[in-house]
Image (cartoon, rainbow, N blue to C red; front, side):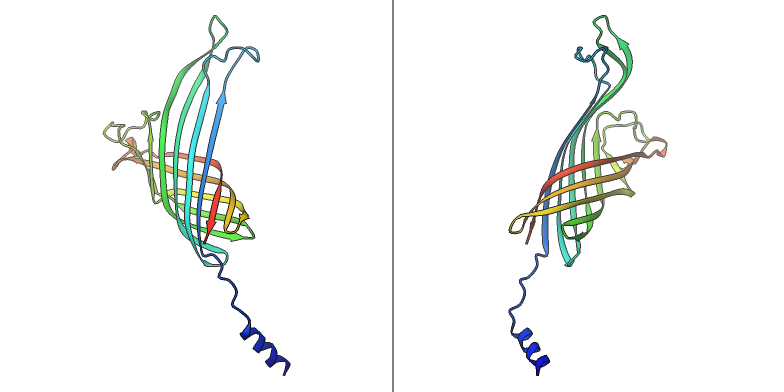
Length: 217
């Protein structure tokens, strides 16, 4: 009788609340990096050797077919400015002089499919940049095979990946705060629909921290 009584209790119990199966993430970051040379700390900085600034947005929309698996789509937008130069001494006022300056602004957009494994608020995710476009005014040294530099760079169809790790903490009902560190690797092999001169591949990689929020429903 006891097993039958237990079975009746289980059947009569109210169903568990459905777990959220959709999640939308939105994240942002601001990064600033500088290098300078001075004769003494506190002197006029003169011209910088390196400047790198970045503002980025990252968002995802995912669906969870299993408790620890999410499938979806991501998009990332970057806007930055880069400068690099060689140290060439100081002027008469002791301020830094540089040479071989390369500088410019860049705008980059990525989007593509994403898969995420999650457990107890921690997650690992892998995304593929199905579409990757970068406009970069500093890279006039990498024209296409016809010598033109007007078109935007396009990512390689095989090397355009991002890997993210992080964690999320619930703060209110289905709203979470999320911290994420993202690694991205890509090769640019074209400008528009034309290959780079000499069929070169311009490779870049970066690590980017993000902070944001996730909504589960």
